Image 1: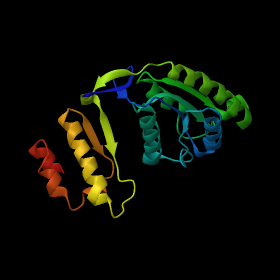
Image 2 (image 1 turned 90 degrees about the vertical axis):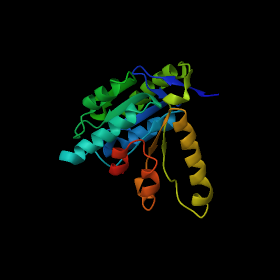
Image 3 (image 1 turned 180 degrees about the vertical axis):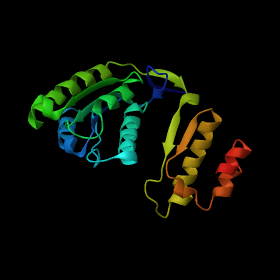
Length: 209
């Protein structure tokens, strides 16, 4: 069986989850987002410490990370909540995510009248969007379209003996079926560069590694 069940996004991507994210554009929106997520089951808030008084590359990186998180194929819908005075542009963030065809709502806490009203408004939006996502039906898709990320969750005495080899075997199997694997902790390559380099698909990739 070389197929899985997943959600085909409007841009063609496939996700095996159908998350509803509550994204704060700034640290000041964290608690509103957290509270909405507590009130609406099957939603995920992603609080962070950024978005205020950032400039240049720092501001751009925060935007890119938030946009990338929202654009992930495992996300079906996003609610973006700003305070109303941060440096991350919530409208631009929403448009970047909306390009993938996802459900997106954007509002700011100050415009709706403060934190309590923002929680009420966000909760209503989240319940409505969660219902729309729950109505979506997963469809079969080939393993060749699956891309997974791998990362060490915390090394212990068994990592090199069991979990890492097992994960490597799973990665080999998926790649053999045409899928993809993204290594999320490249420091773990140290000392094994030559092993991976010998397995690269092309000499230029091997040299770059």
